[in-house]
Structure formats: C-alpha cells, structure tokens
Image (tube, rainbow, N blue to C red; front, side, top):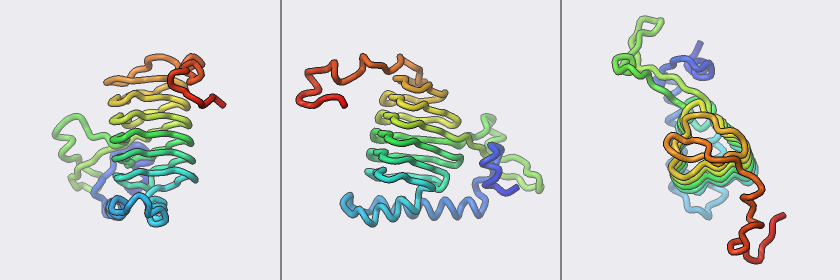
Amino acid sequence: MNEEAKIKEGILFFPGDPELKAIKLRTHKLNLDYNRLYEDETEKRNEIINRIVGEIGEGTFFQGPVTFHYGVHTKVGRKCFFNFNITIQDDAEVTIGNNCDFGPNVTIVTPIHPMIAEERREMLCVDGEKRRLCYAKPVHIGNDCWIGAGAIICPGVTVGDGCVIGAGSVVTRDIPARSFAAGVPCRVVREIGDADSMKYKPDIIGDNSVL
C-alpha cells in the first residue's frame, strides 16, 4: 500500500514520502503564484486556483492569500467565498458544500500526530526503517455554512448544512445542521430558526426584503 492509500485508510503514513513531497511542493509553489497576483487578475487567478484545488464549483472566490498543503485533496462547491488568509491542511480529504462563507484567518486541519513524544519523533516501519509518521482524518463542511473569522476546524469534524460557527471557535466535534455553535472548544449554542430572520430586524434590513 502506498502512502496516499494509507492517508485514505486513516492509518499512519510517511509525509516525507517522495511522491507526497512532490505533490506538496507543487501546491506550495502554486500558492505563492496565486498570492502574488492582484485581485483583478481574474483569469490568471482562476487558472491557478483550479490547478491547486481538486474540485471547485462555479462562482467560488478565494480572496487570498491562500495556503493549501496538498490542494488536490480538497473539493469545494459552488458560490463559496473565502476571505483573507484561508489555510487548508488537507492531508486527508476536505469537502466544502455550496454557498459557504469563510471569514478571515480560518484554518482547516486534518493531520494528527502521536501523543507520546517518542512515537512522534519516530516509529518503526515494516521495511525496518525508522520514520516520523502521522495520520489524518477528513473534514466535511455542508452547504450554506458561515465559518466566522479565526475559526479552526479540527481533524475528523463534520459541520452540517446551514451552520454558523462563531469567530475564534475551535471545532473539535461534529456540529449538527442549522446550528449556531461557538467557543473553545466549540459547542452548540442553539438551533437557527425563523426568529433569526432579517425580517424581524427593521433597523438593519433597511429598504431590502427577504425573498
């Protein structure tokens, strides 16, 4: 079993494997290429981001700067907006649905290192070599989510459709659909319902109306 297959199986893998390093180096260079461009260099930016991300839907926009680790392990839906400084450490798969909004400085991480220091330094592999190993768990974010500024989404987490994650939250467990969740660690505060509609906020809605 190669190292990419081990990642998908959720078992220990060697991040220093030459094939994995080649993927990461390519993506890290593309990150820099994207981040050097001006915001209105739309055609160039679109070409690069489509080379970075495994799948990306129509109308999705990355403000930049962006930091992807593998890039190819990330799938993003349609009409998503990513504000400044998105970081996606996608050793394992990261999936993001349609119509999601990400505040500045959001981080999504999938890799996990052994807790015991000696095991973190090195493990004995089947070929007799000692290597520094880790494993990774996928992250899934549903449709119509708003992830607040500075939030951190930890390995193995699923965020359900229609959720709002408060700024600065550290999400360590699954969040059920249509929930407002916040805190460190992130916990469900309440369900999102009709009472949250802008139609009940005349001082904010102005001349606009709810569809």
